[in-house]
Figure (spheres, rainbow, N blue to C red):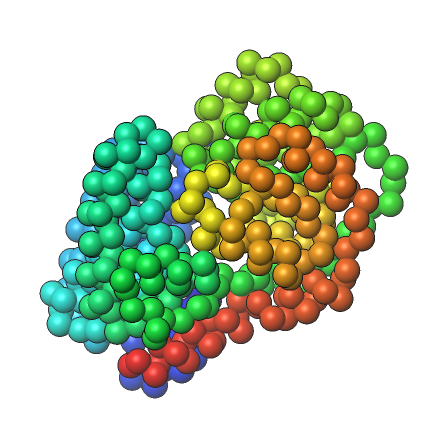
Length: 374
């Protein structure tokens, strides 16, 4: 919505901006309500009803198919002059490209992950031949999508190297990352000076194969003991695996809660001592820049992160109160937690980071760039 607001501020009075999205559906355990159509003086939001998927491949295919048909029909009806699509999933970007070609208009793609590499890495662990086939297929599809786009943006500078090696011309691509949301820019952060019986380490976000929490948290929590409490807030395809590992190892210092709304999440952040982040050790995740990094960095809490590649470099270059460890390395993780818990947070450094990566600022710059294409 930040980009929509930035775009709307540059539009003429007779211009129209329409947003086609879905009703909230990511987690079956968390329900939020919204109207099918919402409008104000600046833009109109169209929300499509789709079933809540269960984080399986088949259910995600089903929900996207329903969304794609409805979104395509609506875009044909609106007959826009320009389309903007985001590739949090490759198929959303393809839908944008296909719709644009059908309507005969230009389109812009915002790349949020490298689908060809991610899907290849995931399948290669099961079958190398199948992984290679998927990589070739989806790389071919990605190249066609990007080649036809009037502009391409990436949310991580780590993407440039990958696509350059794939023979894609990225010389005119842009880098506008996620940034720090407004809710986290002006927080009056509480500082608890009481002596606690235990430290609270918080992870908030998706619990999927990409985060691999089941392979790290139960072992770390078991070794650290009751002096540390882990709080996990979220849901996803690997939640059952995490629950199973916690039960099998009889770990009592991990609590897993379902997703909550942002205001309640901020309260949990306020009561935490350390923020935790972890990505699986596959090459696709060495290039990403998780949006959670911007959220965590603004909270002025020590951060322990199991990361490799660009995201690790980004944290090291911008935030001093962070301890990094190799993904899935239990001993390194424990050492990082013990090393960072008494680290001093440089408030001025965080304020500079927030100012530099304020989401509104980044989206304004991105909107300016899109209008040069228009």
